[in-house]
Length: 171
Image (cartoon, rainbow, N blue to C red; front, side, top):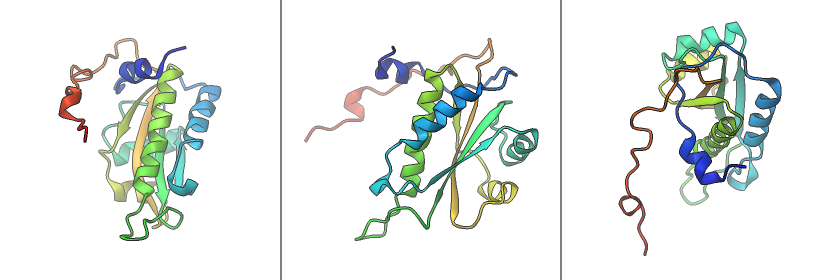
């Protein structure tokens, strides 16, 4: 079994996908990993829309150019009626909750041999229109997925991480 650090280091944004559909049991595992992700006060305001039909993928292509020919995408949203709000300033946890869920699914996908890319470069109103989202459902991420094509490789910037001392402060 791969340790978490190795999993996190090896996972990369896949931008070339094979034509094969993701196996149902792998998709179920990925979705379950998202389901158990922590959310503020366990409110679970996230929603995951599985996009895999030709119609849904055509709609996705109208919302973003960053689909990379995927065979599957997970549209992750949050319901602002259900998310936890911080009492003293009203800060909403929905964005963070949906992001944690997306991260769990992204890492679970890699563990299962499924490539993914977190897409935030999409037109929110197009997503809202194409997928008939109600006004209280806020799109956060599109996780495009599929089996990596044989010629897919990590970006040259993949392992270009800042040193820990540039991002961590001890007080």
